[in-house]
Length: 310
Image (cartoon, rainbow, N blue to C red):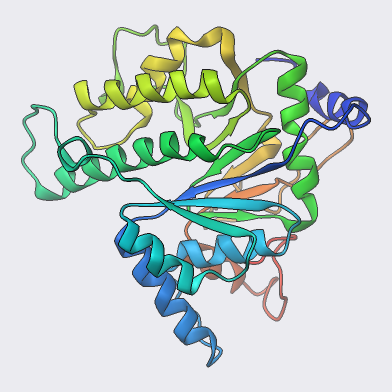
């Protein structure tokens, strides 16, 4: 790990450097995700909230920042549909337009449950869509985030400053080490000392090198999909070969989930940095779970939870 407690100092020092170009977000959406987004728009007029709509919530976070976003969907028809429901002009849409066979093929595997097959196909779509997003990469760096991520709006500048720290270390991609280093179902020939990374938040700083990594990831997930349908196993295999290009993100970047007991993980718990304790920049948990957390007595009546709009 690259001295995580020192990264904020690097960001401050590099903030005065010459402009490196616009930075922005990258997201992907399936047809079901878009259905929920349209439902959210319809209900928003009456003050109702679709608690299962992850995408609508994160798009509204982005619209309250100064950054733009690209949204990759499956087909041109879905792109046209998505454009009707986008909450602001900062977000643009593009279709994946990948050959049907490549998009839906499933590598030979003894899969007993239809649900698992669907999960694997969705992972194929996710990786290919992120790769497509590099066609629209922001010159200063592109931050991919899953739909179920909330953004602490008052910390977004500090979040994007991570690109400065990555550039200083001459790294192409930045990911966070997973809380579970190597799940039992994900064991491969890669040494156990090399942990999985969470693929739900990815800083793509060098578009050319990022494309190389994602192309390898797309091929690896098809050749060796995990038995539980997740994509971290294939990502770990690829990243092991690209360790010189990998930047391990500071824990302050995201907090995954929440604890019913009130113990860590908790989006309100500050993380030690060289600048002092700082709240996480991203809260990685489904919208419905964030709303449950926000209904706790200590948060009731508040518009935000520790800076996050749940």
